[in-house]
Length: 515
Ligand code: XMP
Image (cartoon, rainbow, N blue to C red; front, side, top):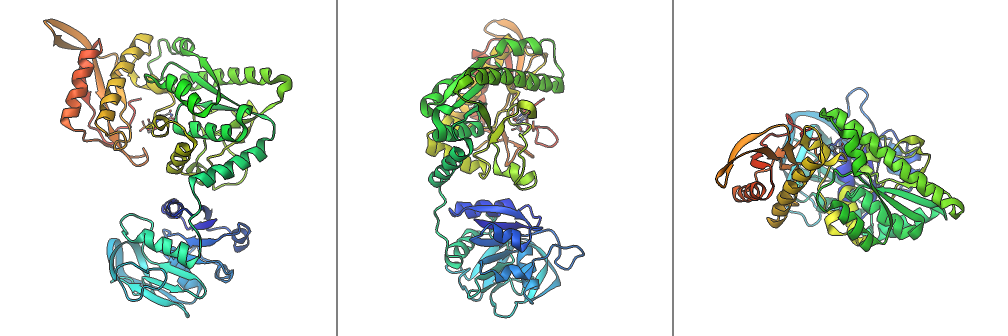
């Protein structure tokens, strides 16, 4: 792999993604890894990420100069560039001029790293210190007002560095810089593709599970679906999927999993109809956190019951030893980067599955980012509607009915939600918005007039949001005509709803969901 050494910047994951976009496999390792640890991973190339510190600050992370003597090509970025310069005998100093954001750079010599990119180019910088003199043997490639040495290389030792952030889109020639390093500097080939990921994972899954049986909880979302499809490709009928229909799903979702997914993937599926169980435990409950806890707990009970049945059925057919989880690479990196016992993601389905289920985990998506999961899903033939599904919370419509959850209210909300989704799809906006929760204010009534009569119905709230990662969000400026169409249709077609309102709150202060 290409190893990205993480100096504590928020950019390390982005760098790894950009390398993978160049079809080269990449992993992140913490800067505390020793040269021996790093070499044990047999890196094809190394990228030193940016970081928050000054290389001269107390306790600033450093680079062991031995790293540059391993014969492995290295690219230093921002802090990594300065740490590299300092380690190899160059000069790094405070310039008094800080450069943040868009910064023009002049290229004096393209070298290998900047080959094919313009002599003047905008870049994205974020630094206070700057490299004043390149280490011996290095050629200076570029400079900016605040960075006398903004890029350098020693092509014979295959060592390269840039002060700016080539991984961000604000550096328009950044991807070219990265690919120059990967293909020309390090001599790598772009052969990491979804097809190869599938082949590797299929082999790994077969080696892990042998002839044992495997179960997988399907939620209808992209991660569990693609994970199941991969395991199915690897071990076929040894896999049984469990889909818990808690009745809090949107229109067509249960059918989508039952029919489309099974038809496309050919997986063995147990559907547990738990609608009544969930209505029973939710009766009379209005407090959001209580609802979430009840739904989470009930989900686990239903899943455990189903798992026990499958284990019992297995009988002499062999043990069910493995549980598939759709853990993604960002979860692995965020929980400390890697090896060792895997935690079951607490919000993977609803409340997370309990540890005492005593299964070994199969996590075929552990090395992948979300967009890569989607690409693998498409390659495996998972239906596009599932692969491109917008986020939908585990507790489902249960937390989109403000008030008690009842069968009637679920029907109302499902009908309104189906109209909103249909119109958004028709308008071609599905991939522009992050998601659009539709919320029923079940305990609120307002007066309306329809036909010749007075109505006394409930409001429906539309909550379209745009977001990068759901941590922050803004309300989406949907076209008025589209909003008008959704509003008309919902008030005309859904009984008991006589008003549609638009939520124009960003996050923060509002969360995306209402509960
Ligand atoms: P909030 O409401 O916290 O939502 O702004 C952020 C994102 O998370 C989704 N969400 C959940 N997803 N289980 C999930 O799997 C949950 O319990 C849950 N609650 C919220 C929400 O739809 C949004 O995308």
